[in-house]
Image (cartoon, rainbow, N blue to C red):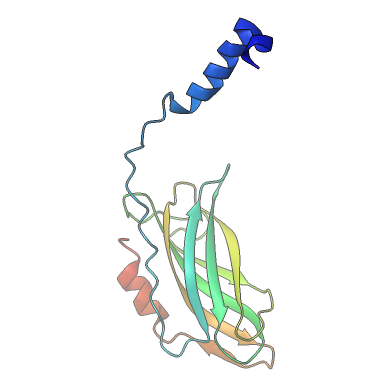
Length: 158
């Protein structure tokens, strides 16, 4: 096979074989810190994961959550806290604080998991979130009685 390829073909083959080795140094990045998720006793929705991702104009914050009840949910409201890479609070342009109320009006079947993303302030690298309010399809609601205390306690530092 090498005879039919010629010198140029051999060069290309060697180049392609060596290419993965060139400049493949391990990055000395710190491993990502797992999200800080606080379980709320008696909450009908449980947050299972949080992610902040870079985007072009704004970043995106994702909340993964589960309906832990046997009832259909029509609406979930979360309080999301925004932080930079160093764990310092970032003010959201619209809410004028590091706390942002985000709402999902997607129906959530009993005992199922879903996720939802929202635009968040550029520079946000870490988020905290907590369920603030849940509206069920039967019209009943659940509200976190300690949401204000949580915001005051958690909003300043990741």
